[in-house]
Length: 92
Image (cartoon, helix red, strand yellow):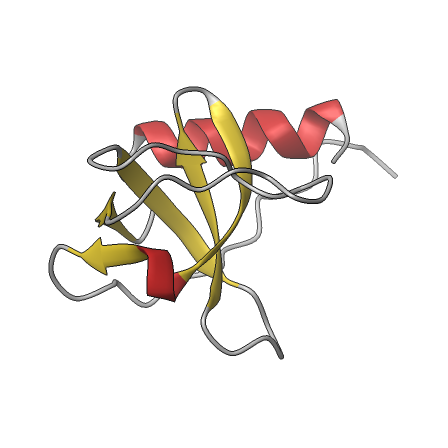
């Protein structure tokens, strides 16, 4: 993930993302891009990964990564993300 994307996801996480969940077990990152967390950690859910059932992008302890829904308990319903475009700052 490039620094600009990381910055955007971190900012979105600080606003609560699309919801929260709590880790049910310790999870060690097995591949690059996986989220590592300990049982009881709160994870901010950023999005569901398209075309991958039960896999989400989340933020925990300052790190952004993928995690499986089987490892967590969601604390309420996840919000439906609203995608908005910012006006372009470049002038023609």
